[in-house]
Image (tube, rainbow, N blue to C red; front, side, top):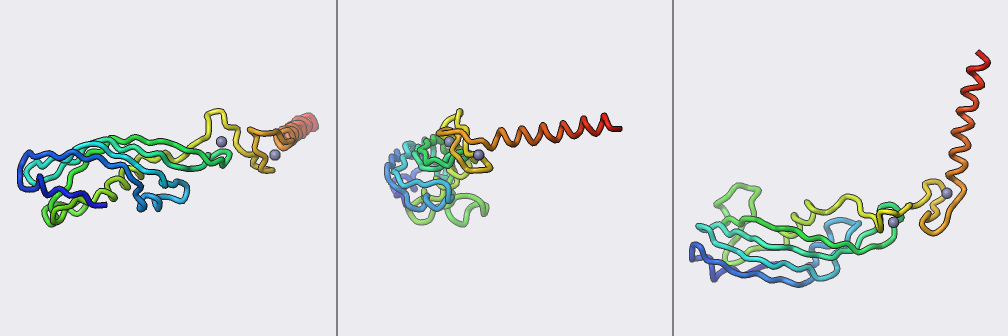
Length: 168
Ligand SMILES: [Zn+2]
Ligand SMILES: [Zn+2]
């Protein structure tokens, strides 16, 4: 996704407002667990500081993902303070963002910022009880008997332990 910066390129100190509100298809390949099918927004400025273009603003997105405990589909929001520099191609270290001609490429900037800020685990609610690891029952909706069995078997082990102690 290219943004035309030609109006500030030749003028040190010149600044351009940026306001974006659209679906960026490339964001959807960030991870299998998240989907950015809704429009994302960015509002900020891009400033020419001696030929380096400084992008500054706030990125907001609503994305779809699944609860890491119960696997229910959920929507989550992210808001990121973005500050990045673009160097003219050939005039920077390898890792930097670059611009060629009169455009900066914003998709990679957004993508990288999302990856850095994406929580590794999302839950539908803090109280989510998740799925039973044994039978797969959604414990938010009903209960199962697995847990009791587990405690019983642990007690059984303890009982045997004490029994053995007595025997010795
Ligand atoms: Zn959940
Ligand atoms: Zn169970």
